[in-house]
Image (tube, rainbow, N blue to C red; front, side, top):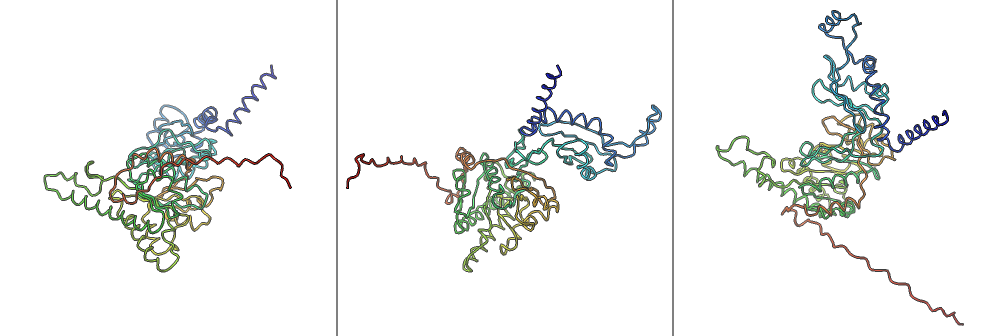
Amino acid sequence: MLAELGGSLAAVAGGAAYARAKAPAVFWSTVGLPVTAMRFSTTYGSTMDACGLTVAPSRLRVLVTRATTRREIRPVPPRIRRVRPTTTGLRVRLRLAPGQEPADVAASAERLRHAWGVHAVHVAEIKPGVVELRMTGFDVLRKVRMPRRTPSGHLVVPVAMREDGTAYTRDYRAVPHCMTLGATLTGKSVYLRNLITQLARQDVALVGIDCKRGVEQAPFAPRLSALATDPDMARALLDALVREMEDRYDLIRQYQGITRAVPAEEIASDIWGLPAKLRPVPVVVIVDEVAELFLVPTRKEEERRDHMVTQLIRLAQLGRAAGMFMEICGQRFGAELGRGATMLRAQLTGRVVHRVNDKPTAEMGLADISPEAVLTATQIAPDMPGTAVAGDTSGGWSRIRTPNLSLADAAAICQQTAHLVPAVATLAAFRPVVPAAVIPPKPSMPPRFSANPATE
């Protein structure tokens, strides 16, 4: 009987160890979550007291406690508002006590992680006085599986997974322009594939500028409204985009020329205030390797470079109201690229920095966000492609990782959504030509040689 019982326990322990290594989500749902929930419920008060997250009780509570019981009066921890288990961890919403702030809880996140035995604890402010502890039971970035429920909407696309188990989304209405940096083989191209395939399913015009002869964006040609594959085409395309932006501003001004009979709330200052029948389609411009637009081999081409940079800056400064957004990508983006680089970077609110080869490159994208974000970007392991630090100039940032998406799958999605390409007259001349599928010829049969032996 002991042998049978021991064998069963060994099998259960072995299965749990295997699930923890190969299927951490299964292990968390079956073993980790119950253990963590019990540990949290039994040690919550003492843990908060040890971390200095308790306050003295109110006078009313002291009087009631003394009048009804003889228990010792202890400091009060934040009140638990809600506990919600997830497939990746545990979320606890807390009501802070008077005198506490979210920074106090965030400073103790590492101690809370060790106390409750979870992989990580992240603190998010929900509203004034309410914070949420987002615990993860395992490293969700090791093998990315996007959540089933993700934020959705027009120009809101999920791109990657955050380290707290939530989805990282690009909301172009909130953050119109973004800069993406990363060295070679860091997953920058995979990030763009996820972004393009998510946008391809929406009513939006995609414009690509890939001066590497189009090797990165040519597979997405069926869904692109315009594509430039060399600096000369890029200059002409940028001029067309600026003309389109000016036409949209003329449309807005024409709509603003209204009489007093129109209510004030119907006056528009951007395309989103226009009626649906007049509103032009949004445009997302994706620039791959922006350095190719800045670097010139001779002085004769400096005029072309300055003109393109000026057009980029104009689009970044004025494009949001016209419904034109930008994704600028490159390995390095700094003042050494030439005149206008720093001014253009200042217009890019969003920042996504993959693994970089030197600290100054990380500082170009994240120094104005947080020094901790710069340090985190320099510590990304080479065996974790797709991992990046994402933030914006408001100061918030987090580690993310994009799910793996092959080039063939991304191209197939663009082929399936080719019917969604909107008609933009200004960009019609730059619409890439998609060649028809060519059936390769059958290999010719090898020549037949005579079986007769050679004669001298």
